[in-house]
View 1 (tube, rainbow, N blue to C red):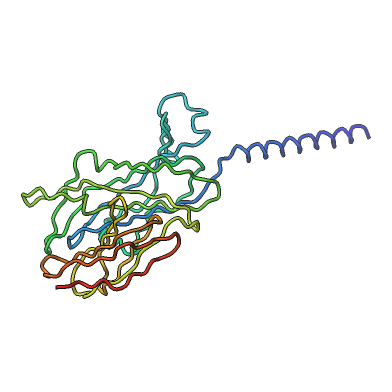
View 2 (view 1 turned 180 degrees about the vertical axis):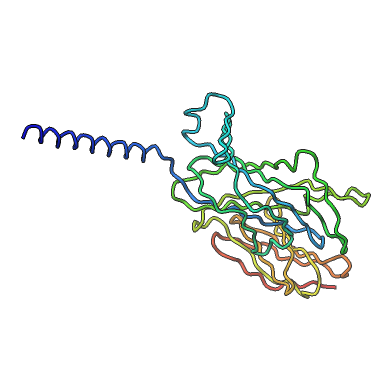
Length: 289
């Protein structure tokens, strides 16, 4: 009888120890969130801008990343990470694709990846380009040369907090007009200029402006300019409609500039108010002679 009782007590001790180990392991497991990585574009006056996107990486600073770091860089080939004294680079598995980024405006975006991301400080993102970058000018497809070092990765600061259980979108905004340099000898250089925004899905932070330009047969660019004279832009759709999203709340000027060969004058809407989670609809912007 004593032997049987001792056996039961020992089993109970083992079970309790097992529970404690499980709880400890659960507490040691870092929390995670989800993040969609997408690509959009500020336009340029070309027929097409073809960008060869080969990879995306991000640098994450987590609370426990240096616990076992001996001060030297360590590579984990299993999850494609490198730890260093500045943070942790995570290499995102994407499908390498050549995008015509001029199509990525007016609410259209290319989703590069959906990932699970650990809790921490998202410090930087790096866009990796291949060699197949081209610009189409007056129907001619021309190569764009990427300066040395740029194709290996263009780093942009993010500095955003990743909280456990949240859903995020990391928007990579490629500014085509500022990124393409015509050398004057018929050659083009691609010097990527990008901005990034980290947004929590379903938590309103930004507003938008929509409208229509007329006549819609005229090629044009619409600029949205804030109080600091910083601007974002878009090219209207074939029916003249346009949409500019992810704008901070505030006052803006909207200027529509027709193609020079049209012979028409620009038109504008001043003191346009943008409010969070609201799309401000403008009256038709009409070009005049």
